[in-house]
Figure 1 (spheres, rainbow, N blue to C red):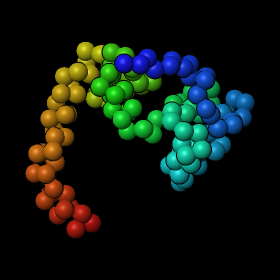
Figure 2: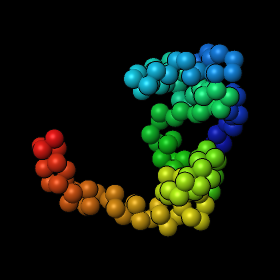
Figure 3: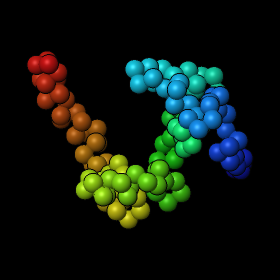
Length: 132
């Protein structure tokens, strides 16, 4: 077993940004996904960019993402303000909860998103898609 090298977020490759706004000027909502994909191709994974002064890491390696998700919330956590903001709005749930509040919700959602449930729901999705 080999030890992975530990990097600080500031050590990650990053597209050049501007003072104060970071990379906000480069993230047009209509083409944001293409910009993030281009940066992944240019910079590798993981990479980092800035929304203003907030650093954001992007990981395009699915195996790495799955490993991180398995270690959540004990080793990794989401942006820490999301939970308090959504709790204040009364809509704190699976996508914002952390720690003990997150684990029972995760189990429930994992069951709902199992292959068997998805396959059973396919005819409904097909009917709705056809109507649209």
